[in-house]
Image 1 (cartoon, helix red, strand yellow):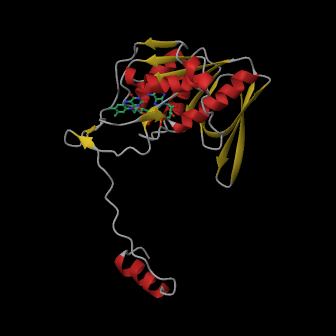
Image 2 (tube, protein in one colour):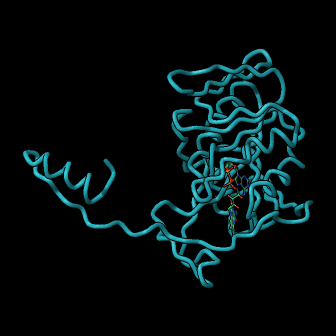
Image 3 (tube, rainbow, N blue to C red):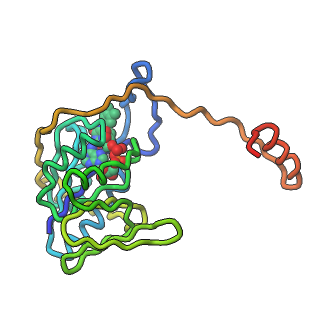
Length: 243
Ligand SMILES: Cc1cc2nc3c(=O)[nH]c(=O)nc-3n(C[C@H](O)[C@H](O)[C@H](O)COP(=O)(O)OP(=O)(O)OC[C@H]3O[C@@H](n4cnc5c(N)ncnc54)[C@H](O)[C@@H]3O)c2cc1C
């Protein structure tokens, strides 16, 4: 069995986001990059399935050379090899089209439910459409037996189970598993695992970002004593105007 996990390289959640060039570009100076947390879950569950079925797990990332330390982190978790498509990825359609060109040979393709920076949540569905295979979004269980992948998804008020015989793509949601922590042996082994670099085959990104804006800064907090419920209602009604 061949499994492909797509990884996104995102700013550390503690990064202070600022913009440059009149708010048209992210200020990348000093930004610390990490493996997208949902992709860690996809790698972990993909490895469980590959190991139980004598399979092989590859990583793919669309991004520049600066992403390689994060790709090595994915390899240190246990992935067998990685492919970096050497292009600056600025939209999900471009990312999905580039990955689709190399993904045809894989039995299972996994993504995260969303990248925690741009939060598009689009790559999984786009890959399904481009490869003409089922795409199952936001899964909390992935199992494999007798040629059939089984997925659980949380839905309003319950859970649904989906079975797929044959190739499919799914996106990892929290609760899928606990992410694997790379061991020292894994970190050492990752240094010499194959990392193939290929040129993009498409014509570049489909969209450009024209402007960024930070959310308005938070206003001060008013503390109302528990015995002053009337005052709270008055403020909600006449000041915040939300009731
Ligand atoms: C100027 C600029 C530079 C950027 N440079 C990079 C970069 O170097 N690396 C980067 O990862 N993102 C980069 N991004 C962000 C990237 O463009 C988006 O993450 C990408 O377009 C996917 O969009 P999305 O938010 O819809 O992904 P989503 O659909 O929310 O992502 C879901 C899943 O798709 C997969 N995925 C997402 N992006 C990638 C990717 N690039 N390669 C492989 N799998 C992926 C992952 O499994 C992810 O969990 C950049 C954005 C801008 C504006």
